[in-house]
Length: 563
Ligand code: AMP
Image (cartoon, rainbow, N blue to C red):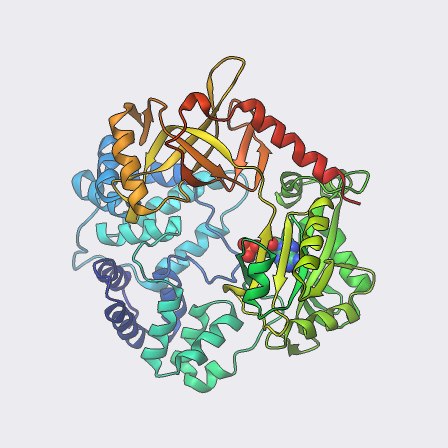
């Protein structure tokens, strides 16, 4: 018997209502045991807030504006009610449920004569939405959404909306799903985790576990043309921390400020995936050609970074590179306008053998042996702090972001951010900025003003101009303190944003200043985070727009020195 979607929504509701990890695991394990084999993959994906498995290239492409329009029509209440419900719950799905129950045509229960939505039916409809593209697709998607939400109960709608926006907020994450799969099918956790890493997604492992048990899960291997989650690095303050973390010796590599790509090759077939595992092959024809021409292996999975280079060969800022990844019609023209350069840094698979359990130095040696004329990231292996520091200074003067430090004997751990790789970044001079407004947080930060608008003073006009926004850096206690202070100096509240009398100065770290049409001053901080509250400074003493501009221009000078 096909399982109704209602059962999944009820399960999620129970998950949302508890923070007991063991209970959550058992609830999901129980559910996985009961559903049909063909429902396991869609159900596990949906419980994790995904319409499709992670490696799947389909995306729903439903904007909030579209979804909002549909909810509005179905609920048929003043939108103010939604805002109110949202400010109570801090959750779009929960707010949807509330307003649908208030005014909507929506049903709280399915009557005997109506056909209930099943998990498979929901998946089928999501697939149709994802496959609706081209002109007029927005209207068609709207109609599809309206019929989907229109046949749902209010509880089902709550979770459908969460899946549509890709955020479940039940506190049940991928790692817990691995626990649940292990529990449901009595397979050791490490076997499930390893398979999930290789398959690039736990939902597929769950499906195999249900039908084939431990043997099936053990036989899961890498598959070419199914991207693997990238290994990630932890931030280290300096080379010393990296050396200590690696037992005294590290391989330092240039950290290029570009876009990470994963390249899969089998004979002449080459596909390129972005860091988020999206197929970007069409945007990067020159990478495909290079790999076909240069890689001396029949089958390979390679990792590297592409950077955009100017006409003189010097690296351009990240934002230029991003234009190469947007969907464009005239790719040939783009390849001329924004030439790119590829640097390889890892090899995960070579001629039918997975290399992820091989030590880093071994993978790098094999990479070097097959990479032909393609550059590898510049590397120095050392146990000498002074030498590492020299290499860092050189990397920065060549226009790079800093260094990566990799543990020599480390294996590749897909999807894991750990100490085997450290990133050591050049930090730009921090800025002291004024908080001019704040937004209410949601989820755990519900009820707190936790997202801050940061401004610098224009020394010519005296005006405070926004240069960025951040919710990062402060502790919970600091956020609670900020909330109190900001509420006291609030002048108005509009669209969930509280505008305040500028009083508080914060020190802000960031990675780059970008050109941006978003703000009046034309610049925006990238990856801004608050490092300190500067109660010792008044807004009059905060940094100026002129200083921000100076730092912005220095970045170019640095980049221009790149060989
Ligand atoms: P993170 O993704 O936050 O762990 O930061 C590391 C990122 O730096 C990677 O995702 C790559 O995009 C980028 N990167 C630049 N150079 C290298 C390198 N030599 N090795 C690994 N990653 C690199």
